[in-house]
Length: 139
Image (cartoon, rainbow, N blue to C red; front, top):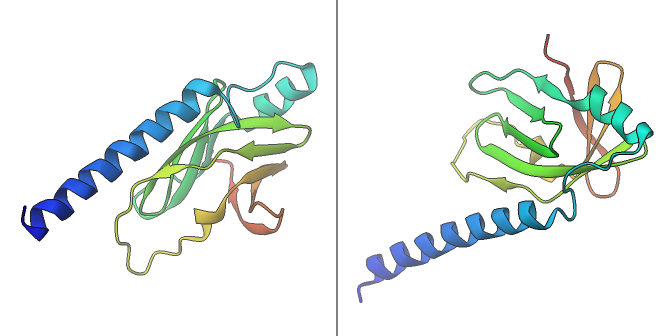
């Protein structure tokens, strides 16, 4: 088998593996499966659901759904994951992402693992709780 063909097969397997992991994460609901249903959590989910940032080419954004899913973009690559509500903090499971080369795009959202709502601002945090940046609620 040629080196080119072997590399192409490996890339195909990697893509299939990524889709399998995404499916497994969504099917198990852990971590970040469908949000819990306590009244406090419901209030956080109500504030969270919707679009944060600008859904335009080159702009980072996240869209949270009531079913516990998140879709968006870091400004270049698509992002999809799930979330769970833990008090005022919203934890995100590791996300699946496209892997396009994006010269000049700031990929600050690549480390996202949690968010907090501060009025009309979504504060993006890494796994240690350090702030990475923020997104304004879309109008």
